[in-house]
Image (cartoon, rainbow over all chains, first blue to last red; front, side):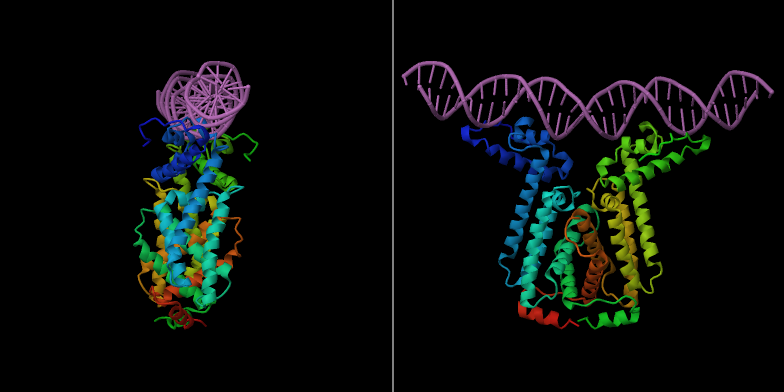
Length: 223
Length: 223
DNA sequence: TGTACATCAGTGAACGCGCGTTCACTGATGTAC
DNA sequence: TGTACATCAGTGAACGCGCGTTCACTGATGTAC
């Protein structure tokens, strides 16, 4: 894993370079072991080729390192969402592409996604800001869709529903990888269209309508 | 926490009673601490009022205890879903009630839900059977809905989408409790109806349709 | 040009902690003779 | 009726382990005089 050549000590003003190396090592360990528990300061230090106390030169404690990892994950997700929707012809396609990119990112980086979006909520929770950031992304697209007339209603509500939708797909597949899942892209698109249509319909099915009436109402929607 | 009276030793044939006490203590600890890490054999033993090695009289190791906890959680979830849909007038209402009960159970028992549905997948994973069981539940209801004519399509596909939907709502609220979530029941019902309508519509929105055409199509669905 | 010194990047060894697990044991109690 | 014994429920002390964290330190290198 770690390179064989013993690490060269950084020249005079370049001590900060180690910070980046430590961060990268933590990210890589997370990817390779698929387990947050495996990211110990000892493991990170070994991978960088440095002694454990060196980490403390750049991070106050282990939590600070994990916080930095969260930030990095967020930036990568942010970038992925931005790139995905860059070429979209309209806001609806942008939303679709962003949703797909979100799910793809989560499944390509399951343990990274886990620590920012599936972890136990902690007091200060830097991951909350991350969530807010990702949510802001969706919110922008939803607002644009409303502007276009594609969607209607409260943008925050709509965005929360969509977010819960993509999170459900991503996190369930991460937690239950052995389950016989259908191909990702098709599954996502099916859910995306269903939710999109359902939200666009702007209606609810009242409780106690009776099966026949429910069927009749839903039938009227069928192509 | 633990009762003050020192625990009485079980009479001759009743040694197995301790198993139940240990299991209950683990469940309670999970609920009270909201953290799987806090469930150590020492903490469990202290809560029961027994020495640590006593746990080994009934569980091969810690993992066996955790597996038993998973089973217990599943049984409780199973019961909650069954009770929720017992009085439903038809399959569609049954599905709605089950979905609501699922989300309610998860949020009332967040750490229990976490260990069975949000944990890292492990090799043998008894939680997978749990997932299959819960999924079977949804599948039954979906199949009944198809029988009624309320839904159309592949029951497995439909059930997976619905499962991902309720899981998304539940797990995101568990992971991000500080987020300004709307009231649970209304939020669930909104998503449930949207997904229901969307799935019932049995159609997809092709990529590259153009915003105007997408808007026109969705407009035709509005009440 | 030489040298003393401050700074900087990083180290080695040790700390206490809580954990899961093991092992030899204790002492009450039902049962056989 | 008394007693030896097997069984059962549970204990106390210790084990090694990996962890985060701390502290006094080393040794290379740029800089001031």
